Amino acid sequence: MTRTAPAATPLGDAFHVYDTTLRDGAQREGISYSVTDKLAVARLLDEVGVGFIEGGWPGALPKDTEFFARAADLPLRHAALVAFGATRKAGVRADQDPQVRALLESGAPVVTLVAKSDLRHIQRALRTDVTEACAMVGDTVAFLVGEGRRVFLDAEHFFDGFAHDPDTALRVLGAAMEAGADVAVLCDTNGGQLPLRLADTVGEVVARTGFRVGIHCQDDTGCAVANTIAAVEAGATHVQCTANGYGERAGNADLFAVVGNLVTKLGRPVLPTECLPELSRVSHALAEIANIAPDTHQAYVGSSAFAHKAGLHASAIKVDPLLYNHIDPEVVGNDMRVLVTEMAGRASLELKGRELGVDLAGRPDAVSAAVRTVKELESRGWSFEAADASLELLLRRELAELAGPPFTLESYRVILDHRPGGDVVSEATVKVHVAGARVIATAEGNGPVHALDAALRRALSPHLPWLDEVTLTDYKVRILTESPGTDAVTRVLVESTDREREWTTVGVHGNIVEASWLALCDALVHKAMRLDRQAQPVSSVSP
Image (tube, rainbow, N blue to C red; front, side, top):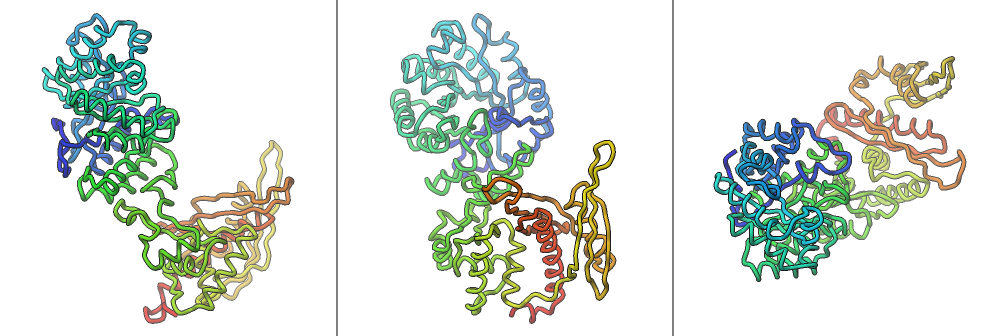
């Protein structure tokens, strides 16, 4: 925990990637990290190669104090831990200020101090004058440096303060740097800056002072990543970000987009080479810890970041994937996907087939028929974008590669029983033909789909030994028709797993139970199809 500079990064200490997920990112509405969570986040951030991990505000928050005590045992390979806190209070000596002492006692080798750099905040929030405000900064920096700590200054509200009174803003920076701070971080605390104006300010500060400057941007204008990159191009050599852009209000500059841009667009190797392919994995893992669904459309690391829908795109991608991808997705640990919709053409379907392991080469009639089927079904509300298993079944049917289904339906019935006390129980009865036998089974459930699934499993389990491996993990319903009333078309997505893989199927119908039945059946047919193909000799797999 004694490291004060990034380790094993190509640029070394010349450029800092500084993560503040555990402090600024944790201010996002809905995020509440436990100490165990914070330790897990720190380990993941170190795996991705950031140079500094801001762990929180020791002394102000008991949870953060505990984090630093436990983080002493973290085997960090790349990052230095940073404690965040305020300068001494007005009229109090730095070595006697409890909050300043807590920063030392955290054991963190690096300390980031936050200080007001806007005259209006100094006068109205701190209720002091500029001279005392600068003394508070200088005294605290000098004390911490004298105790062997490396110090960065977060100049709060810097851009607003510089626009209002540039001399005061620069005077605060000077107080920190002259006392021994290494970096003056210019903070767009209100998130109201735009790239060109921000870059002009950063360039002017660097030219007038010669200080090493950093950048910290909130995303209230939707420009936090662009502002961060603009600041780097204007001379900043220290970027502060949060994982997935977490933060209060609209969030912060997204670590993964900033790093992706710096490396792939500006050619700056700011992370260890082996860490860049970990970006997507770490982004998703951090989302799980935060208990926030990953942003599928997030730049670089989102599951849809390299997903292509239009047939024109797919035609070009078939020739060369880079024609419509701004980078090779594997550089950041992501994958290219082709989405099959009513916009799809032959090239889209062939590429998707290749992705699913379905060989459509040399089968133009089957491809054309599949394209027609997809477009006709999607005009009626079906969607195969998120239902790869149903699409694979459709393609293999067109290729005549599917064996007979593992079972056939004779009929099913679902009833609701409203019982005394307000309990509502669903009961389903299915009649199916499986393995040459006619089977009737009845089961109850907490809803019609649950009851139907239970009855089907009761009927099939004695004949399909693999059925117990398959479980339903997610069930999504969407009403498609805009007309009011109860006659809307319903689309159901069912996600299933057998502990080795996951697959998604779709069903569409005017009746939600029938839509669910179609999706459930496809899920089981897909499992059976995979087992049949695994059992085939290798030479017979391809048509």
